[in-house]
Image (cartoon, one colour):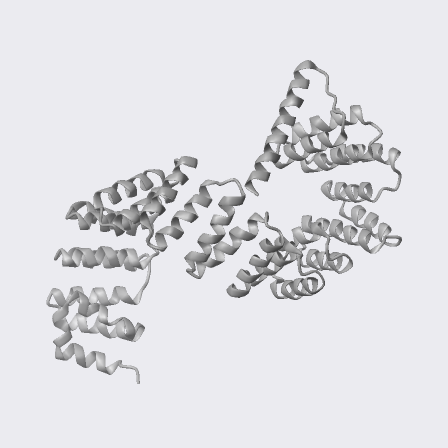
Length: 468
């Protein structure tokens, strides 16, 4: 597949080179119309709309009798938000092919782009009376696009559904359905619709993909994976299906299956930084840290400012207990992104492992300040201070934490600090509150102050709140 893609790229780049050479000479001529179409397709995919429009002008100059190039020009003008010029181009197309459905659909889109929604809908309603089932399907898609502009996503959904009922193979309708379902929250209806389509056409890759996406949003993860797999088995160059399947596998922590999907992408398509990052993450979770670091480095070869790649390299070194290398990687991540509390927290832990408690305290504090709404970072800082016998400082941090977040475990830590300061009455009152909030977390206080496990009063309070 990659070899075929490489050949295709080579062919289009040769065509571009030939075209640019003609531009320099001031004479554009291709013996076949398809060369113009190939150039237009390429520039459009690359979002180089002005270049694509330039090619259509040359194509129209050479093949002025071909209505297709006028229609392509109108499409590009609409993409470029030049609806009035698109309308003028369609007038020229109509002189070559009066009553063309494609021209009428583009005219309806132009009306919508100019805010003339009623005119667009009126035109489409007029077209419906004499349309075949296939033509009606495309009319419904065009009408759905108008309602998309109006942000009436539920109506858009039912129009796309009608389009697919007329023609289940309508790729325009299938391609737009995922976005529509997301915005209209029609996931269950989407499942029923696409299952019905697949009963008639079991190799419809887009239908399988939409079914997978609907199941994914409904948290039917195994069904989503199965649908995505059928999507790329039906169409082996369906890149999004591989990637989305891998995403669900990652969520389910099925790293081996996710890795296989990402490797399929790597074999078939052009790699990117995100792909290498995910492959590295899979290897990391599978315990192959050397290979994981290799792929994280490949990520950085694509994007030297990928903070997550540096962080993940640090995580691999941390597991291997190479703390200085882990610290170096964490610091690189932080220099790129200094608003990620997890980076600071892991750096603090690494400094603890090296015995550099001064820096560890700084970065535990930085983690809490960066993510003040997350109780775990306050807990990590308080835990560090208690272990360093800085009980008063730990209580001050707990006061600050109370102003930013809430968590029952913070109450256990406060109780532990009060016990350590000899304030037993106050400590028992706070312990009661903590037990009321979350009894199951009470073991935390014994980890902090082990002697309390044998304390009669503490045991008595705990027994009172013991669930029956």
